[in-house]
Image 1 (cartoon, rainbow, N blue to C red):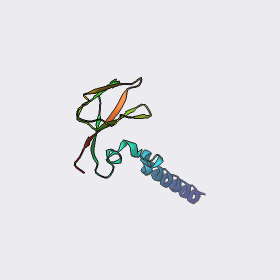
Image 2: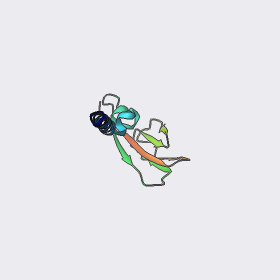
Image 3: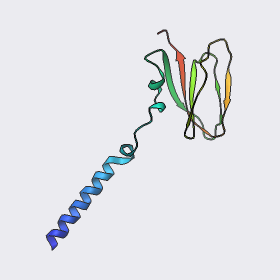
Image 4: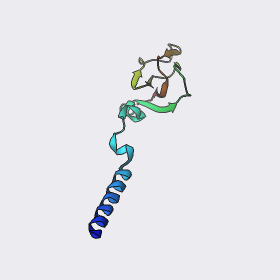
Amino acid sequence: MARLRLTLTAAAIAGAALLASAGPAAACPADPRADPVTWEYDGVYDCSKATVGHGVRTYTKPSPVAFVVIRTGGTYFVSDLGDANEGDRTYTFDKNIRFVITCNFTDA
């Protein structure tokens, strides 16, 4: 009986360790839209990602930027493709901005 209890205890500990080692990343794959490389279209654009301050709901896209990808809540907003002559554009959202991916033109 003691041997059975020891075996069951060891199995339970091993199972718990296996679940703990998998972690939350194993449960849900990363969203590729959150990766700047997704938006570079094989080198046509050079993109970078930045978080914004807490409670920010407005973002101004500078004129020379090609486009921006803005995550608010669970939604992604992709701005229109711009050019260097159109001036800055400001976008306002109902939810807080989580991050902004800024994409610039390259020579490709």
